[in-house]
Image (tube, rainbow, N blue to C red):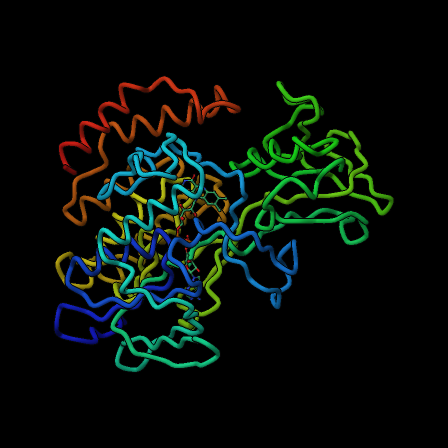
Length: 446
Ligand code: FAD
């Protein structure tokens, strides 16, 4: 049974959880549609991931649920892994600023992204919608189909009732770690990349890094500037151990087979290294500790579901929605499309299929994954179809699809990363696409 519509008016009172890039896009689109919006933000700043926080957590590996939570995972040296033209919101291009102190590089440092998000929030007056240092503790359905949001601020707990809730709490805070035989008696230190900030603590150490995604690549180079040796263990590397070209202290290995109490680490090809630190660059888990939906929405092997198009739980739509679950995507423009759809679905401008039809779509999606042998934990990986997804959502909300230059630039940037992994942020060969992007920006954003 669908949840009854709580309010016959078309303008809703909406709670947004989180003021990162996703929550800001949601706030902008919801308000543009005429809804009233309150954004709950645990920290004292907008920006979420992009707020650099030098603190690390009390449990450097992450499994202790009582640890102090630090939201951010940025390391000091981080530069974006996307060109700014592609990365920025479609509605507010991420062009180089000439203001003093700004970073005009095409792949800027993290501080520049934070500046850009501040500019975005200022441009659209979003700061006034945010309640800072206000942590959402519980979100649950109340009897008339509305939502009770329980929150804590300055040690006081209170609650309010909303027509709808948009969850934008990010998914790079709850570490996932690899299972390694023998790890409980291995004597070295273990850290998750969530708690990596600067290379200094790794000076003269022999470091094992697990993983090969974007942050593993960056962190291995960062650590190698001071460490004695860096050994990268990765599922995607199946040959015997070999030195990484261009580096005299980084080695590539297949995954770890086991570790032993005298400090050795054995890889699946039989090679062995004695190390003092294992750095897990093994990704994150979706985590919604505040969400109480009577098990309508669950997280199972990193699948958040059931969700229609990664956004709406069929039987709770459009009153509960999620922005930003997909990964291996360009996040900001995707947040915009998802948010436009949510805002219009709430006002009644766009209609969603019936709950039964949405559920059928989700089931078909899950069984197509199963048939293709794709593990559940890849449910929200849109690497192969992000632009198809964006354009589909764009059509649902009567918006223009992604620009052709943006799609082409994404492909050329991805290729460039493979061809020149060490220098792709400073060398490229898609000037013609940069020109097209700027023509577009100049035409649409005078
Ligand atoms: P977040 O930015 O995580 O924001 C979530 C917000 O919710 C936070 O402010 C948090 O405090 C708040 N919150 C959480 N729980 C609660 C609660 N219970 N109550 C109240 N508030 C709460 N993307 C790119 O486009 N380019 C890049 O180069 C890039 N590099 C990255 C590098 C790293 C190391 C990481 C981790 C991510 C990177 N990303 C990159 C992805 C990045 O996460 C997204 O760009 C984007 O910032 C995600 O926004 P979000 O709003 O979904 O989540």
